[in-house]
Image (cartoon, rainbow, N blue to C red; front, side, top):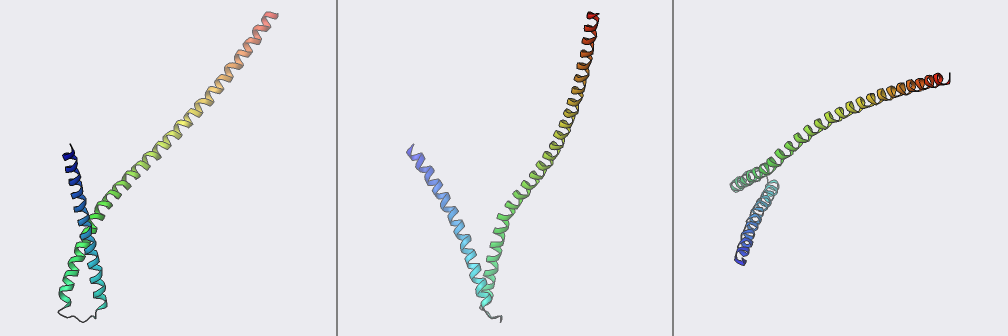
Length: 139
């Protein structure tokens, strides 16, 4: 059992190390790009044979950084767009449900008023019948 746990720990440590190595590689690429870009901006604009290899490596670094940013941002943007779409559909659903509840409440209010009117009418009729019955008994 200890051998299994140690094996799993080694696997997770190896995975973390590879992730850290990838992050370090990207950070190094960004640092190189920034250094090359700043160095390029500080140089005179006269083209010389020494600047051509640097420009090619800087361009390659820029392309690598751009592709990395596009991959990371592309996934995030797709998820954000999906979330926005889901939230919009949820907003529409909640709006429709709010209108439905308002209609239901209005219907119940009208029904309640009609029931109150009917109850008053019945109570008034019962009161009249009771008076009429009392009048017949007294006569």
